[in-house]
Length: 355
Image (cartoon, rainbow, N blue to C red; front, side, top):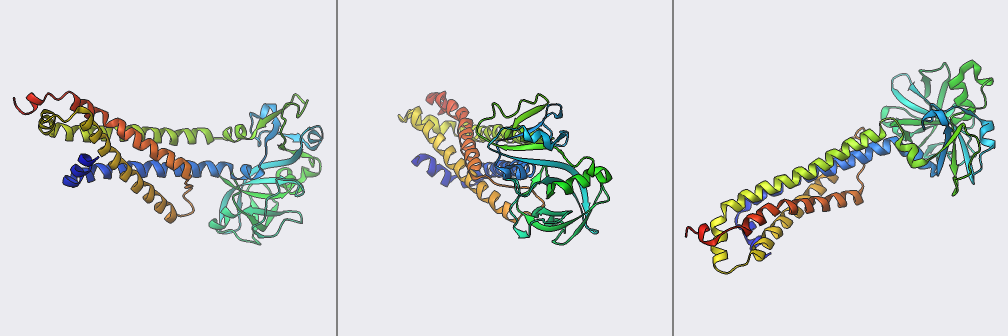
């Protein structure tokens, strides 16, 4: 460690460059991990609020709630500790000056998926809704009358709730009857028992329903089946993995070049009796110091950037994940130093000093 630190202090510029590259790679890894986490939250916020075990949808729906169609009568045959029925559709909502894609949830307010109101009040009348607070950033406010692309019905925002987006769309919660009027229009009275899913809280999913046309989907599987969720997550994850490889290669190249430049010096040191183990540990220690500094600086810069980003950028930093990625970056940097260690081991002292 003594040799490693003293060489860093002597050749500051060289090692600042290596640290700077590691810092930039670390920053990008941390930022991408925050972006991946934020995008995942955009898809699942409303579902996570349910704290549910599973959801029942129709067999032919391919685990998609909008594609599922059943009746309130199907819920009567469900065996679970607690159930909540839900209807769901997507629409474009406008308050006159602003427009947003929204997911409309029709629910019963006495069931567990009823959201907690953070501003305003609960819906008590027909066509009143509680909206995701994400809509406030898009110019929507309490009392707004919303026109929808799919119906002549008008909805009124009477309250806001936090963390309520589904498949990246802010959610509007209303009575089941409100949902049915929005979806079926004049035919709502004929279709007043139509729903899209049944949300469950239960410890035993083995005998929830005997109806072969229905499928019980565990909540995590339901989330990963959302359109684009898995593809989006895998894309960003692979980008992070490639950055790990790139980081290792960059460190390997830098340290190998530095080692080649110092072959004669290492030859003299070996001729004086300094062991390969000591020199190798010095290179590893050097890499460890540089990678720790680079990762810590990148970590801090990512958190600072996240604090100043606009709300439209879906970044959500998970500290446990960031620490794990930081540790991986340090490890792959050390692995990248193996080429330099191998070069040092193969140095012949006589040839290195020109003997």
